[in-house]
Structure formats: C-alpha cells, structure tokens
Length: 546
Image (cartoon, rainbow, N blue to C red; front, top):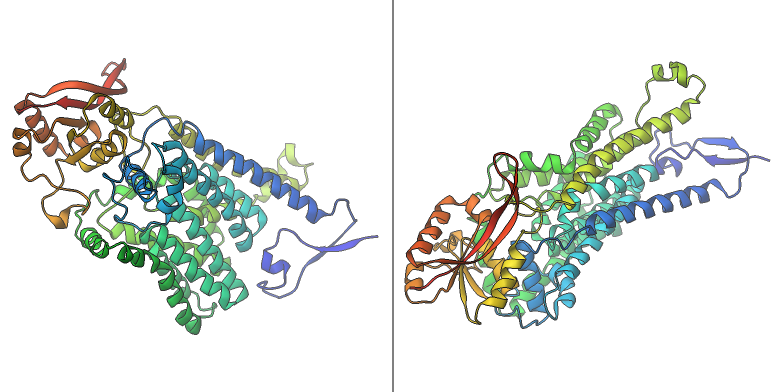
C-alpha cells in the first residue's frame, strides 16, 4: 500500500498551498516507512540543533574569563550592581546613564554581592545562544527547515556575533529581541493577522528597551512595507501598533522620572547629538566584513543575484533589515564595532538560503567517478561540502578570536582589556582608601572604578558639556589638583595613548612634573623587531606627590 505526502523541499507556504504560483500542491507516491518521514525529519532537526547549540555555547564560553571587563562592560556591570544595591559600586556608577535599563535589570540579581565578572558574561552568552536557536524558526518560516538549521550553524560560529555575545554589552541581548521582532513581522505577512503586527510593535518596543538605537529597525519595517506592494499596508493596525510601541518603551522615561532623574535623558540626548566622530568613515568597511565572514557575504549576495528572477517579499524584508541599520550607522558620526550586529541574522538567513538551494552544474554529473552516483545524492554532497566550507571559514577566525592571549592593541567592543582587572585589583590591595586616580581617558577610569573601587578621573574628558558624557567630571586644572595633593596616582595605558597622543604626552608631562614613581606595571606578550618574544607594558601606575 502506498501513501501520498507533499514534497519536502518546497517552501512552507507551498506545502500548505499558500504562496505557490499555481496554488496547487505537488504530491509524490512512496511506500510507507516506519517511523514516518516527518518524525525522522523532526529528530534530525532536533539533533542538528543540539549540535549547533553545543558548538555555540562552547565557542562563547572558552576562556571567557581570560581578561577583565572593558570600559562599556564595566559601566553596564556597575549599573547592574548599583541597581542591586551593591555597596561597592553605588558610589562610582549611577544607575541611570545613556541607555535604558532592561539588560542591566536582568543582570542585577547576579551583582548583589562582590565582583562577579563571569556570571554577567554567562548571562549574555545564554542570550546569544538563544539568538542562534531563534534563527532556526525564522529561517524555517521564511524558506525551509534546512535553511533554518544552516542559518543557525553560521550564526553559531560567526566571529562578529560570538565576540560581542561574550561581553556584558547591550547589543547581544538586543539582537535576540530584534530577531523575535523580525519573526513576528514574518508571521504577520504570511497570515495577514493584525495580532502579529501589534506583536511586532510590542517586540520592537522591548528591543528598544535593551538599546534605544534599535529604533532604526522601525525604518526597516517602513522600508519593507513601502517596497512591497503585494503586502497589505495595515493603516488601521498601525494606529493601534504605534501606541503599543510607545507604551512599552515609555517604561524607560517613566522610570527615570520616578527616580528623580528627569534631566538625565535630555543631557545624554544632547551629548549624543553633538558628539565628535570617533572613527573615520571607513571604520565599518575595515572591521565588520571580516568579522561577519567574507564567504558569508559572498554567498548571501551571490545567492540573491543567482535567484534574482525569483525574488519575493522575503528577500525584500531581509535586505531592508540589513540596509537601514548599515546606512544609518555609516552616516552617524559616532561608530562602534558592535553597532551593526543586528544585520548578522538576515545575512545568515540569506547565506543559508543560497547554500540550501545551491545548483549543481549538469556537466559535473558526467565525470567518470560520478556517473554511477544518483544526481540527488550528488547534489546533497555538493551542498554539504559548501556548507562545511563556509562554516569552517567562520570557525577558524572565531577560534582565533576566542583563544587569543591579548596584545597591546585593542578595539573597543571587541573583547576584554588585558591587564585592566589586574591593575584595578592591585590598586585595591596596595593603595589606601580614599586614594584618587588620574587616568588618560574615561575608558580606563571606568575599569579602575569597577575593579579598584577608587575614585578616578579622565584627563581627556572635555570641559565643554556638549562634548563629554554627562556622567564624567572634567578636571579643568589637573595641575592644581596635583599641587593640592588631591590626586595620588596616575595610570597610563597603551590603548588610550594610541588613540590620543596629545593627552598621552600631557599625562607624561604631569608624571615628570610631580615626581612620578612607577609602582606597578601590567605586561602582555609581544615581539621585538627580530621576532623575539618580549613583554610589552600596557598599563603603568605611577605614585605622584606635589
């Protein structure tokens, strides 16, 4: 006896008779099998996702505590600790700063007592792995289960996503929520149900509570609807969705107002609008493509070109999700390594789509060794080899990034700061309570505050309120502070010195003028001109006196 079942490699809508061109299902006749094919397929997907999850968790936790927090991590962890009432940090880190508090609130239970680096990072790791898993239903809903599994694999080992989700940053959790927002939008387009459109608005509001810059994704949704005439413009639903979005995000300004910090948000907005550029226009082009994976980009956009005549609303939605953040952050003067992280999910799905339907040239089947092989089996082998090649091209630099031993060069947002934690702890153990530290910039000042529990000030903080973070205090007359013995130690670090040679020279002048004496130095491994391994100083602590 034979049974009828749909062809499994068609799109989900085609299997349901929805979006196929002729509206008809295709059926094949086969002999019954046990267990049923759908059950075997489900177990294969579950096994593949389990392996992907283990791999994603492994690369995100390997040597996760090798280096201490960088500046942004110290700020967010310090906020979480202050929110939890940890007395070690309430003096140095205000609860309300530049961003909403969703992620910090999630982290706060782990920072109630003591210094808890690993726990905070592990929370973000878990959210990063959940993002990998969330990509599967998105890819399966858009194209097929095969696409969902491949997309999850690519994201699991993508260096860009791995590096950022190993740190206590807002961008990793934000991308998880952005992925759920995109999924809700896909469900709305497929089912034409207003509930999913309102859910998209609500999820976007939650995403903005993780990091307010994700509001640019509203532009992605608008661009998609404007560019896709086949999708119904939900005008009435929008009138309902916008208040839902505003109501969800309103928890941030309302919480500030109830805490008596109504001026904080406005001060940070002014600062963000008038900040000076911190990187050249070529910053993203120089740093992000290699972190995403050149083969991933080539596969994603090559697949779009190959299937350009079969383009649908799916590709328009994914490209809108990529294009709007890329254009916005490219034009925005302030740039950060992790700012473009929301584009990795649609890129992974597009690359997986191309790999899942990779064509096999007909002449390949005429090779002498392959004449006897069925063409379907040959196609599977070629596609599997392509997936393995792209995944391996990501895994190698990913492993190199997570197993590195640190160096004298550092890019903000790309990992922890070598020597920062050790220098801060040395200050705690070897300097008297009440000691005040002068650092080269606010980045090292944040690290010293977190690990050293010492008040610190950055020399490079601008006296102009429009050009400095409202949380930082500028020293208009550091000479006067040093003459009056209000500053007791000076900390030089190679990372800040490389970004600002002017303030590095000024700091060294103050060290010489006030009898600076080296009391502690942190080193990393380096090499001299002949290639011989030598220790390179990255943080130097000076004791100064009038």
